[in-house]
Length: 143
Image (tube, rainbow, N blue to C red):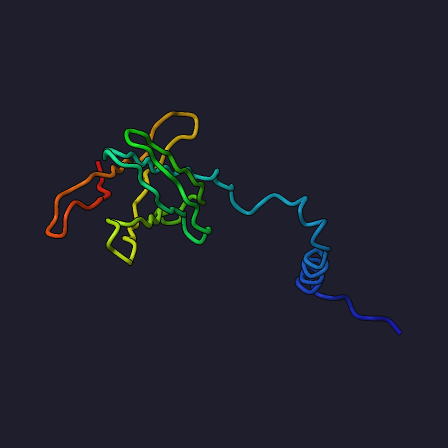
């Protein structure tokens, strides 16, 4: 009993199915379907322009917050990487305005794109002491 000749499209389909069934380890030898972009760097620099030490927590996206302490006149630069083509990450900062406030102030600070080989500070934000109707409070403002 002989089998009739298969049409070329059937043979081609069988070849594609067989090649796509190759184990995942072997597929790593294939070239990516599009060029992969290098990660983009973002930085935020926070300075303390007040005359008191400031303690705050900061984190990028879903990271766990890390506590930082800034002495008067000092600065800290926080950096992260993110995929090209995604929205620019924001740094979330939690700090207390004054000793009488129970809830911390929570701010989302937009970051600046930077080249990692430079000393560009990215976006700069400053802590200041400002008078208010409840006494002096700390504020964090863009420069």
